[in-house]
Image 1 (cartoon, rainbow, N blue to C red):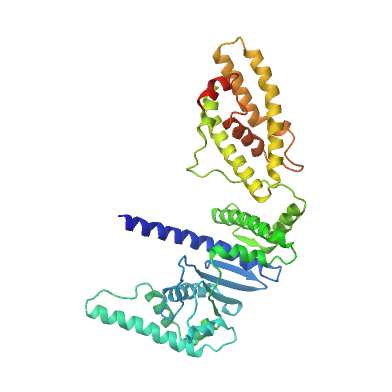
Image 2: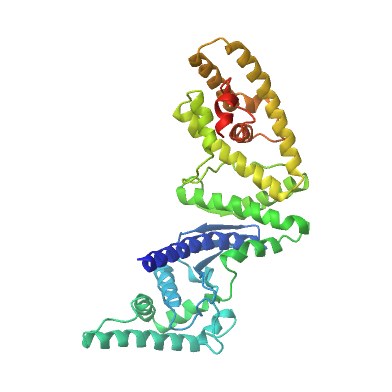
Length: 405
């Protein structure tokens, strides 16, 4: 059972990385272009479709998480599955305006006829012959197995072989004339670093940060495109604009709200003190829900800033002091007004203070830096401080909670 679960987990990881490889490779394709008139789409006619200068480039991507990725040979499943995809797409293509790219992290063995596909000027005639012979061998082997009532072999590439043989010899040659194989391509883990190397006009110390933030932005655009929340294609002009914005932010040391459009993972479990603080003032389920969300965002943002720039730790601490001061003025006044009241009324006043941190504090307290406008940082930082009992909502929160923390 453990072996089965391990295999399933491995397969799932490979599948997920395969998808992100598509997204990362599409970004890489746009970054390295020298033309402004370009746009890219994912999961349309092919894994990645790039349009530039009147040409359509289709990319089939074959990623591998193996330390020794499989080589691309005439017997490779990836080769024949790619052939099937391309041949199926032919009716919708103008072949003279299309190039077909098989991208693989594996190598092509020395002496293989497939090496002809690594050079756009190389003759493809011998390759057509070799692929025809291999496709015929696959079908003959299956026919022999069928007659012998044995299990049919080559099920993972028979469709590609049949589709290839269904073309005329001239059609096969024309198809391969438009085809390119890109072996030894960077893996999903290597692409971000490679993308950074193309930012020649960016200061060297900023290149990794630009690439990191660009990838995060790109991830969102890909998800939005697949969900129908934006156009299916992403234009290079959008990419250029985003790069300029990121570089300007870094040069001005502008703080960027990196978690405004993301939320905590489904399995996120905040510190129990967050819920205890809210329960103490009889908060509603929505009070708890949004507190957890904003606390995660603020905690992640604080961590990201501190990791990227150690000097930010002092800025975060100083701003926490500002937040506590604003809270203290309100909490002291509330505690005094509630001193002789029943607990229900104390809870009601405390709940008002909790909701103040969500509704009013972000617009009444100065931002952590000039130009910062994301409310989640103030809202969530108050929850971070509440977890540490540096602030609280009930007039007597320290007496009620401090002893058992």
